[in-house]
Image 1 (cartoon, rainbow, N blue to C red):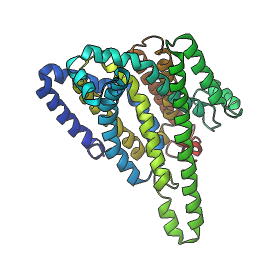
Image 2: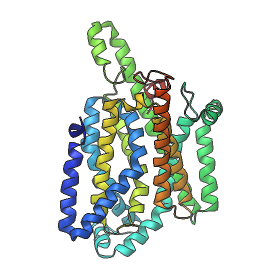
Image 3: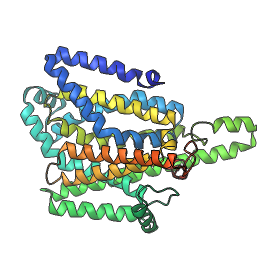
Image 4: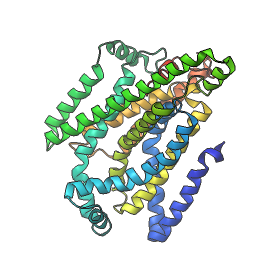
Length: 372
C-alpha cells in the first residue's frame, strides 16, 4: 500500500536530489531537501482537504490528478507561475524573465515580493471562501462545538460567507494595501473563481447523480457496482470530474502561493526552488490518495474540521501579509498544530466509543452531497 501510493514520490525524490547535486553540489542538495520538508509541512492541510474532494472523483480522474495534476503543480505553479508573475510585473517576456531569475536573483526576488499583495489577495480570498462555506454549514458532528454550532446557526443567513469575505477584503485593502484597487480586484477575482468553480462542480456532480438515479431501473447488481467505492455513492465522472479536478488545481495554486514566496527565505535560485517544492508537492499528492484509500477522513472524523480551520488561519495570514510579512513558521505551525489537535481529538472520540469509527460520520452527508 505504501509503495504503491508513494512509489512515484520516492522516485521523484531520488531524481530531484540527484539533479540538485549535479546542479549546485552539496549546497543545492541540502537546500532542495529543506524546501521539500517546508512544502510538506506547509501543505499538509491541503492534502486533507484534497482528499475530501478526491473521494468524490472516479478512478480515472484520480489518476489524472496524480499525472497531469502533478505536472501542473510542479512545473506550472512552482516554476512557470513565478516567472509569469515577474514577467507581468516587470513587463518582460518569458525568456527575459527566466534569464533574470538565473542571473539576477535579487531583483527577481524583489519583483516577486512586489507582486505578493495581489497574489495574496487572490489566494487568500479563495481560501477564505472555502473556510467560511465549511464553518457556516449545518452538520451533525462538530469538533469545536462551542464555536462551530453558533457559526452553523449564523450560516442560515444566505450568502453570509460572501458578506464576511467581502468585508474583510475591503478592510484589508483600505488599511494595509499600497494599491487598494489592485488588491480589491485580485480579491474579488479570488472570490469569483471559488464561486464559479465550486458551483460548476456541484452542478455537474448533481447532474451525474440524477443520471444514476434515472438508470436505477436496470439490473440491481449493475447499479450497485456503479455506486461502489469508499463513499458508497456515485463517483463524479465526465464534466463533474473535470470541474472537481479544476477545483483541486485552483485550491493547490492558492496553497502554493505562500510556499513559493516563503521559499525565497531559503534560496533565490528558481531551479532549486522548483526542485524542492516539486518534491514536496509530489508527496502531498500521494498523501492525498493515501488518505482516500485508507478512509482516514471517515475514521478520524475531526481531521476535516482541523484542516478547514488551518485553511482559515492561512487565509488570514495571507491577508495580513498584504501589509507585512508573516513568518512561514507561524503559518506552517498554525496549520500543523490545528491538524494534530484534530487528529488527537478524533482518536479520543474513537476510544471513548462516541461512535463507530469505521462508519462514515455525520459529516459525510456534506462530504458526499455533491459539494466540492
